[in-house]
Structure formats: C-alpha cells, structure tokens
Length: 247
Image (cartoon, rainbow, N blue to C red; front, top):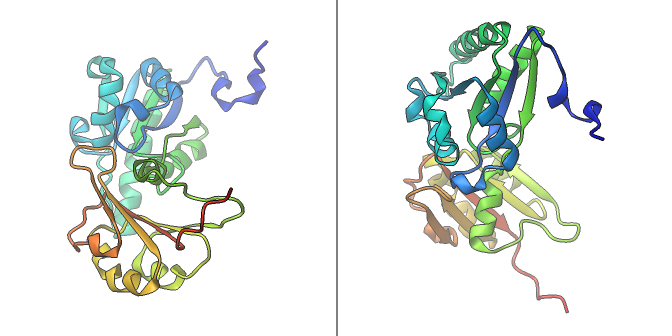
C-alpha cells in the first residue's frame, strides 16, 4: 500500500491546484525523468521562462518528450537573467501571482526549468513566492548539466572520498581552483575566457562542455579548448591529475 504521507506530491486540497517545478534536464529529451513526463502530462497549465513560451529552451526540450504540450494552456514567464534585483523581484512577483490565479481555479500548473529545479534555478524564486501565498508547490528534480557533461566525457565526477565544489563566478574560481577534489564551473558564459590563463597554470585536468546534449554540442579537453566566446550554456569540469587505476 502506498504511503501517501511520504511524498509532498500527494498533499490533497480539492479546492486548489498544485504547482510543480519541473526540471527538464540538460537538453536531450530522453533525459527527462519518467516522473517529469508524467507530471507534465497531468498538468492543466504549463509555464516556461521566456516571454514567448514556445521560444523557451525548456519548452523545446519538454515538447519533444511530451508532444501533448502543444495542446495545453502554455504561458510565457519573461524572467531573463537580471542584474537589477528590483526589476527581477517585480517579474517574479508578477509570474507568481499569475500562477496563483490558476491554482485558485483548481488547475494544476507546471513550471519548466532547464536542468534541475534546485540548482541555480529560475523557478525556485517563483516556488518560494507561491508557497508564501499559502498555495501548494512541489519540486520535481531533473538531471543537472554537469552530470550529463561527465557522462559525455566518460569520466566520474568524484570517487571515494573526493570533495566536490560548484563555482559560479570567475572570482570564485580564482579563489577555489586549488580546493581538493573536483570543481564544476557554471554560469560562466563569455567570462570563461578570463579563466583560461588561471586554468592553464593550475596543472589541473580541464573539460569544457558547451550546449551539452543540445544541438551544437561542443566538448573540449584542456584549458586550450577555451575560446573566450563560450555561450551561457558552457561549463567546465576541473579535476586533479588522474591517479593510476586501482586494481
């Protein structure tokens, strides 16, 4: 017998819908989880982070796995990467209020998010606001881009008791490049080029993945593969020099 208390997904409120933040993975539609596919199919309304929902990268990934999306109510959420936090707050507030109106009507709502919903996710700002309004919201995990990148390079991210660090800005990298274990550098974009010299001097193994599992995927090994023209969807995996294989 299923233990309904074990999952927030089974919270029941007959009068209102539930918001689902859905991680759609790094790009390959086959990397959506079975749960993500099921929840997308069950939702009445779908939001995705772009003014025109059908131009959203997350939507383009999900619709390949769930063609039924094309016949659903789909809403764009214009939440670009904003350095102006006041403007960003206004955008998040507006989107949360729009979602809340659907929930009050008893409609279930899915918000598509590239990668995972707990990792540098646009969606999490909406999630907190909707919960604060007293509505129900659930997180559905997706495969993170760095896991897909490690698989593409056929390497392990960590082994044994190795440490694992996620760095998101050039100044974090310069401070953290010599931390033990594996470092993943995300959200670098064209700033990745500023790290080339630092990484070359570090003596570490460097793996560059751009648009991993998406059209236009580029994989490069070594700091010399950094061009300085990398897109937002570029990440680096930095590892200590490989140890001899254990017997």
